[in-house]
Image (tube, rainbow, N blue to C red; front, side):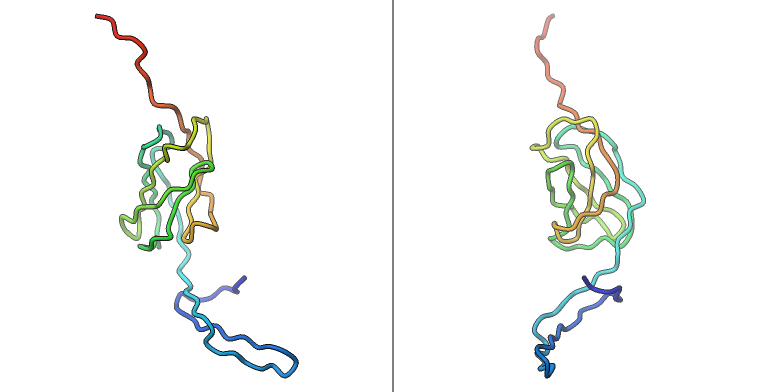
Length: 127
């Protein structure tokens, strides 16, 4: 885990052994500013419903994603202050599921809960 670091691109160096033999520039690490979430809406919907997430420091990168319940979804970058996530069609109906956001689709930050319900179905039509 990295200590708190200012946003930017850093070279990684590795010191090995007792004599501290150095391997310089073996990789680059990009540190991003921490995003923050102010809120989201709607707080419930059916699979296919778009959820708008408002905040700051959102990134226009392909690794930005959301998790709704146990289903991951690509986060659509709208601006540095808004993301869009769609409730995946694979998400089953549940009264409350966790809504999380990630900049790498691996490490998620919980931002609240949403209710997912089935689409209404018409069983019969009568004149």
